[in-house]
Length: 116
Image (cartoon, rainbow, N blue to C red):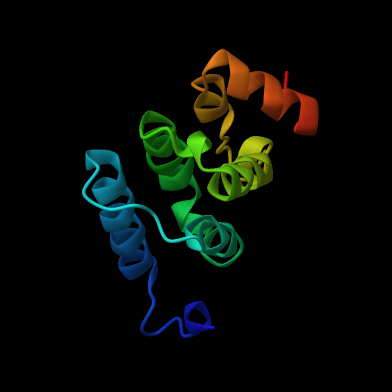
């Protein structure tokens, strides 16, 4: 997988790519590729320095763009948010993004993963 090539796919390159794709999604210019959230999940495991950006920028942006209307992307969003929800070792948490969900989606998230 290309993310394994850390010389080419540095944190900044990965952030720029995710930022561009999610920005185009938010403006309605483009839809997200089906593998977008899978890539985000892989990025979480390989690029710890991006956790804060994912939690505080990317996940909320995707909520603003109503990603939850696309079932497979929504499932990936929930998995990614859960991965970063209780990251006490880094002090970064996706709880703020989770709490931003509309009530129906928040209930779905809580039913599947629990949430305080």
